Amino acid sequence: MNDIINSRKVVIVGCGFVGSASAFALMQSGMFSEMVLIDVDKNRAEGEAMDIGHGISFAQQMKIYAGTYEDIKDAAIIVITAGAAQKPDETRIDLIDKNAKIMKSIVDNIKEQDYKGTLLIVSNPVDILTFIALKESGFPSNRVIGSGTVLDSGRFRYVMGEHLSVDTRSVHAFIVGEHGDSELVAWSNARVGGMSVEDFCKLRGYYNHTEHMCKIFENVKNSAYDIIEKKQATYYGIAMAVKRICQTIVRDEKSILPVSVLVQGQYGIEDVVLSLPAIVGKNGIEKIVPIEFNEDELKKLKESADVIASVVRTQGY
Image (cartoon, rainbow, N blue to C red; front, top):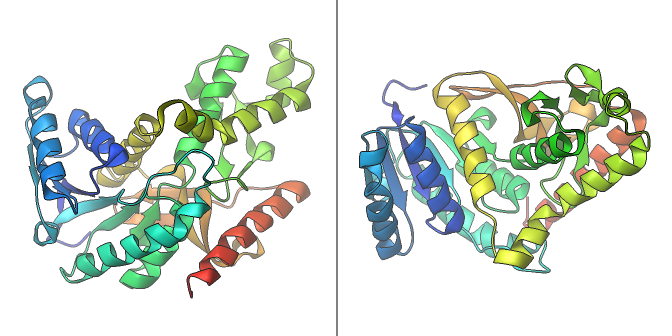
């Protein structure tokens, strides 16, 4: 990281449900000593800063305030959550026309400050907006990361853990591709306690493996729609995913996370941002991890890439 970067400073752009929940999670984490909230509605940013700040005495000391883009220069990470929220019966891709314009405006403001840190894109559709942020900023691809399928994979591990009556942290599996309807599970690499999912299912007395796994994946893929139908928005889960990604960056953990990353030739996919397992550290994306896919999974991954690429083309890229 550049010498002017303060590894203990984070900026959140957008103070809606996701932005404010992410700010709250990051405040509780103790990772940062300074947090700047930016929103087109300055009063909203000030209100969130005050509300979250009132809980600092129960956590760890930090400075949290509503700011402007002039406050971003030395931040380690800028988390961008701004954009129109997904409504019932609306896909993430349906948001693109509204949120592409917002993303371009935000990136223009960031470029004016000669920013040297990492951009973490959370706004949906996250893969496409990460691509737009990358192209509009001119930043190296390692410094522009999307939250991708980190949450999807977390949801999947949670549901699998519940199904198999095992600690969620013992389930190792990635959902990859689009953070959306064309995503897929990398079943070929999924493990529970070091065993294949199928073998572990048998260990637990489940023998209709394919039927159960398909049902679990469909439940995970549609979970955001279910939550939005019930409470109009999802924000706690993604806030925890934001915290996890920030953690691996500022602590240089070099963790492997399924983030939105620019793919250039891997698996026969070219110049598309989608989620694949990648090593993430203080300089952002270090390397895409080349996991193995079976023939069907690879076909679905390429189809997912085509879905993203077709929408990107409608935005003139």
